[in-house]
Image 1 (cartoon, rainbow over the protein chains, first blue to last red):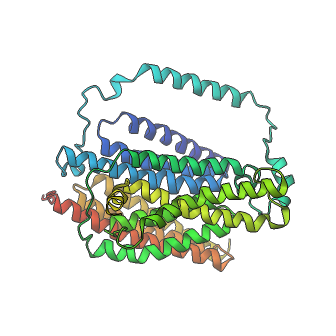
Image 2 (image 1 turned 120 degrees about the vertical axis):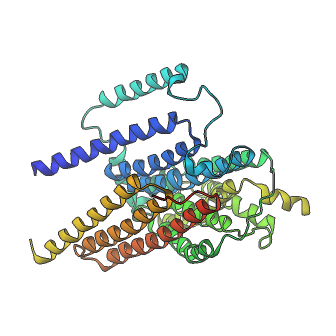
Image 3 (image 1 turned 90 degrees about the vertical axis):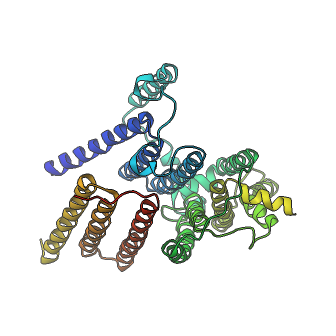
Length: 326
Length: 99
């Protein structure tokens, strides 16, 4: 038993140290492409950390959003930076450098750095001064779990006990998208034919991704999963489709897309109004119907999150052109 | 330990060996094409061995199916992405390594 513990302990330490090292490298490397790749690797290791901390829900979300979609967003942003200056071969020879001379480990910005140290030591102090047997709110959650309509405590908190937090999160996503759209379009981007390999891969993966998304949505009621994980898998399917040159505006009218983007927040707000009228409290579900209502809310939320994340990746250009043609 | 456990251990160790070999290739090979070759081939095989070793320990067919699906998806994605990276490198005229 002793050796097993030692092994686990050393693996955990290795994980923690690699995280610190990756974070430091990602922040200080002058090569932007390298920084993005390091950030993605950092996200994957954070996923492992969440798994080690017995938080598979967060691990799923981190893998899908933190490492996957954020990585894709950063890479596409980098590609647009690259097309304005520097030569494309540089990615392979490691020369996508920032022009700014001062970027580098020598010029740490001292103000943010000292703020960071202050916040970290404050948080560390609070955590270390907590009583050892501190249980958090989990006993209360498990007490009320039977009334929530689902069996997974994380889903119960997100969609029932603290559903208004999730409502606000949906709105935050929408506002983020509005922010991206308001930055304007730029060039309408026309993908060339993606090549047979990417084309076939997309054709094979898209149905699988949609299936996985539906599975995550359904399984969220009693195991790790739920709307955000399902939505980000759906968003990844959208990103893959766009990368392989799928054109959106030919197939779907723009009003429908906006309705899908709004479906999640609208469903939440409608549910909030109805529950105020029936139960007298915001998003207080009747116990008997809670499971069904949560599934309904999550379905709309999944569609909206997927569409929003894909739209964030697209950057709003295609829809802008659509608007002009309307 | 039963005979199944021994087979599992052998498969898992073999899997780890292929991952190690692939990583070594990624770090030591001279250009992007040879590195891709080392990484995708060795890791696909390593993951296959690891998944088989784990499946032998399972009692539920459902979980075994999920593990197999993960392996198939990674095979598919790994092979395709290796091809795409190599094609991108060729298009950007990254030279092949010559002795």
